[in-house]
Length: 92
Length: 313
Image (cartoon, rainbow over all chains, first blue to last red; front, side, top):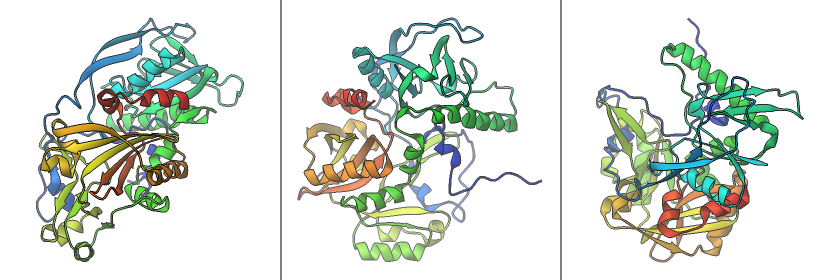
């Protein structure tokens, strides 16, 4: 069955504002394939160290205060920040 | 006028920008694309220049016409109902990216940074070429899928090499996350068959005194020397945060000119540059992350990066 195949040299979705950059990984239980088919670079894939204070420092998080949602989106709410602890993401 | 912040809910770096904007009395609206379509809604009329439409996030209506500028950092994936099949999710994700993304891209806003420019600036080979064009010192580099070419490169360099991933460098196997940090190797480590299985980036190893993370906003440079106290951190400081010491340092004029020209070539306002500095004081360009982290460095050093971003917005 014919399938739409995106241009492999131009990840077009990455040119749109909402494309997530980097980072997201798909969970997999797959085993390494073996020496004949395993790319060289994957030899250097290592378990990340436990991140220490610099990359996991809890700090404040500011966000829009949740309010009741109206079906037509007409309700105008003032922005009121609230804060809570969050965990910093790793450097990239 | 409103400043729209598009970032993940738990993005602490974006929080610093929100805090700085609020401190200046700005009207801030923050959205997380992971909330789409469950609690982030959209109704847009692209043909109406005067009334382009609105977003509604957690009950707050954001008129697109009221937005002046956007700070965007690593938006999250949309989250669709769990019952959707994979083809349905793929369809919904693409329609939403082209729809919501297209509406946002159509607005005459000032972006930090324009998503297309960020995408273009994410290709490491292009980074290296543009850096060289801008007068920055760049390590000898080879992108190849040919093992014999890698060996010839190693012979030309005549010393230690590094291998580095050109994309995220993240892989999950056996339900375990692994990261490819910049890794030192020698010619003896090269394996022609395995190199032939995809593209690989090799660079000469720069014998450095320390690294620098240089955060640039327009023409303002915030340089922080990163001193590594372990061999692993010396090869790639991301691998051992606990082994690092930070020190604010000055940016040499020739580097300043180079990075500003670099950002202009890519049409960027922001860049997180990584340099290695050799004992003779020479700064070697390694890469530039167009949406890199800087929040932890601002907290470590007190550098006013968020304030500069607010001014730029």
